[in-house]
Amino acid sequence: MSEDIDYIIVGQGLVGTWMSYYAQKAGKSFVILNDPNTASASSVASGVINPVTGRRIVQTWMIDELLPNAVNAYTELGNHLQETFIKEAPVVLLHPSLQMKESFEYRLTHENVYLSNNNAKDFEAFFKVPFGTGQIDSSYWIDLNKMIHAWRTELISKAQLIQERFDISDLIIEKEKVQWKNYTAKQIIFCDGNNSMQNKYFNPLPFAPNKGEALIVKIEGLSNEFIYKNSVSIVPWKEDLFWVGSNYEWEFTNTEPSKAFKEKMIQALDSFLHVPYTIVDHITGIRPANTERRPFVGVHPNYPSLAICNGMGTKGCSLAPYFSKQLIEYLQTGNAIHPEADIKRFEQILNN
Ligand SMILES: Cc1cc2nc3c(=O)[nH]c(=O)nc-3n(C[C@H](O)[C@H](O)[C@H](O)COP(=O)(O)OP(=O)(O)OC[C@H]3O[C@@H](n4cnc5c(N)ncnc54)[C@H](O)[C@@H]3O)c2cc1C
Image (cartoon, rainbow, N blue to C red; front, top):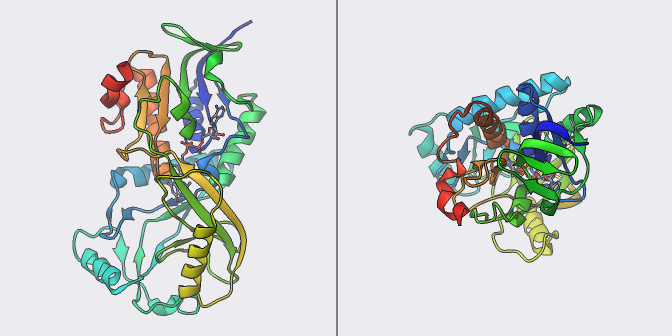
C-alpha cells in the first residue's frame, strides 16, 4: 500500500540536511534517500564561512544576510541535537606577498567591515611571516561531518532515512504528485549535488563541477582557534589535525587524489611553516558548481512536483541553510525565492 507524504528528498549532504530540517520544522512529512556509496562534497569540505574573497578581499555575494542567518541556523540545529557545530574562527592572513599586504591595507581603510589588524608576533612561532599578518573577523568553522552524522542519526531513529541509491527510472510523475516505490509525495526535492547532472529533468542547468583536493595533516601545538590563510588555507579539522588546501580544477578526468596537488601543498607548507607536520590523509571532492556562481533553487516549470536545491559551489555552508529554508517556504506559501537563485531564470532551457 502506498504511503502519502509531503516530500521525498534525494541526498543528505549539506543541502539535504538543511532541507529535511526545515521540512521537519514546518511539520511536513518526508523521507530522505541517501546512498552511502555515492561521493558527497560535504564530507571533504573544510567547512569555512569566510565573508570576503579574492585578491581584492571584497565581500562575498549576499554575505550581510547569509552570515547572520547561518550563525542562527547552525546554532539552532546544534541546540536541537544537543551538539555544537559552529565555531567563530578568525582567519589569520599570512600575507604571501607585498602586493597582498598592500591589498589588505587598502581594504582596511576602504569599505571595510570584516578586516582588522592583528599582531604578527603571535604567529611567528609556527609561520614565517615576512610580509606581516592581518585578520578576517566574523569567519566561522562548521564541523560538517559531525553535523551531518548527528542529523542522520535522528533521521534513522524516526525511520525517515532510506539508505539506498535513487534511480530516476523508478519515479512516476503525475500532475500534482510523484510516486517512488511505495511513497506518494506532493514533491520530490533533489539535493543530490553533482548527481543532478544526470537527471534528465534538470540537466539543462549550467552545471560546472569543480574538483578540489586537501591534505589532512597533523601539526602539534598549532591553535585550532584560528583558520590560517597564505597561498593555501589551513583549517582546523579534528583534534590536532588540520585540513590543508585547496585547488579548483574545472577540467578533470578522474576524482582521485593527484600527486601534483600533494607536491604543491608540501612545497607551500615547507615554505612558510617552521614546525614539523605529518600528512595523514589526502582527500578529494567535486564541488557542485555552475557557470553562474549562483544556486539553483525552485520548481521545474513543466513539472511542479519536481524541485531542486543545488549549485552551492564553493559556498555551501552559508548558502545551504538560507536557500533550503526559502525553498520550503516557497513550497508552503508561495513566498518568492531570491530571483538570482530561482531556477525560473532558466525557464526557457528547462522547457525544451
Ligand atoms: C575540497 C572542497 C572544499 C570545500 N570547502 C568548502 C568550505 O570551506 N566552505 C563551503 O561553504 N563550501 C565548501 N565546499 C563546497 C561544499 O562542499 C558544497 O557546496 C556542499 O557540500 C554541497 O552540498 P550538497 O548537499 O549540494 O552536495 P553533496 O555534499 O555532494 O551531497 C549530495 C548527497 O546526495 C547523495 N546522493 C547523490 N546521488 C544520489 C542518489 N542517486 N541516490 C541517493 N543519494 C544520492 C550523496 O551520497 C550525498 O550524500 C568545498 C568543497 C570541496 C570539494
